[in-house]
Amino acid sequence: MTDQPLVGLEADLYAEELKRRLDALDVLCKTVEPGKRRGTNLHIHTNESFSVFRSPTEAVWQAAREGVAVFGINDHYTCAGHDEFRRACEIARLPATFSMEAIAMDREAEADGRLTNDPGNPGRTYLCAKGVTRIPPDDSVPMQNLNRIRAALDRRHRDMSQKLREFLQETAGLPGPDWDEVVALTPRGNVTERHIAKAAAIWVRNFAISRGLELAEAVPRCFHVEPTGFDEVTLQNFIRSKLLKVGGPCYVEETPEAFLSIDEMRDLFLGFGAIPTYPVLANPVTDGERDIHALMDRLESINIFALEVIPARNTKERLAEVIEAARERSWPVFNGTEHNTPSPAPLLAELSLDPDFLPWFKSSAAVLLGHHKLVANGQPGFVGAEGKPSISDAGVRLDHFV
Image (cartoon, rainbow, N blue to C red; front, top):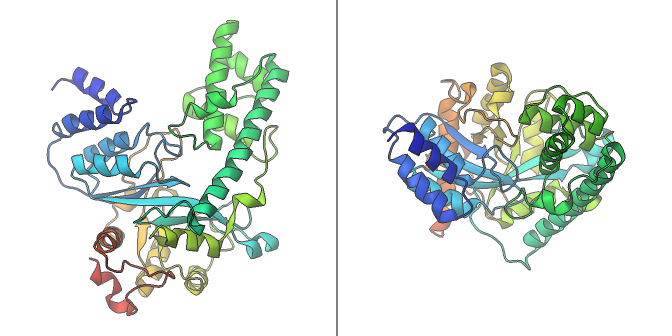
């Protein structure tokens, strides 16, 4: 097949119709020479939250091309992309995992001003539900809590969008993008700060064209700040950092309803039949993570027995420290790349393939795949209903899944 038809098929990977996306992937996968599958990536975002990927199917196509051995979706606050991701991975014959990410609040750390795995906000703690095996009913406590968080975030993003609209009215003489324009950038209305920034970037480009201005003139005029660049990625990141973050003119603080406690978030994840997992920031080193063994002691005391890393952000020395501590306790360490920005990047980071780490990442991926399979067959997964490992003997725990 020539390059031209391939380009057309690749555009179909983010077509509006799901069948068209999957049909395009089916044809494209037949053009890939069977090769060695190398590393694992169990944490990528899709357009169901925010991502460089315009559909879960498009993400799977990159994974098929790059030889990913096990691939995992991990969107913020939603499992809406799981079905498409599953179907796409089946077409690509790619073992798949299904997860979700959310932010909890460690109230003690917040009060002490201590950072955990959010380097800019004391107490805020990212957690992942690795290996979602069920969607709880709408009237269940886990789903009610998730919907409460979503509603609080939705109100915040509406307020931010309105502030942006009014800000641009003042600076440029025209109202900025409205809420409907922001929502139109999402498949199901799961708006994030990045969608607001993207809508603003689209708006300022259109403003420049309508006024006959160069973008270099329009951006400072509209935003009152000199940009660092004008490519799409740089512009979106610039808008987000200067307008939407703390201190920016369109910033809106989250309300308490946007956060559960860590215990509550753990229970929410268990309600989804998942493994509650702590993503280690690792670099930069925060006070809450400085002593990795003390961190794991605390996690164990609240029934969290799994870690995750984003190796592209870490030094080899720090990653080695995290993985060695996990080995000592027979904890899985899942790895990924996130891909939750407009920037394209490989799915297999250099340190993900490092021979010092790859075996543990593969074993951890086997744990997650095994968790999915066992629960689907009515057997206990990696953790039980309270979050404790279903196999109490740490010495044989991971071998059960590998």
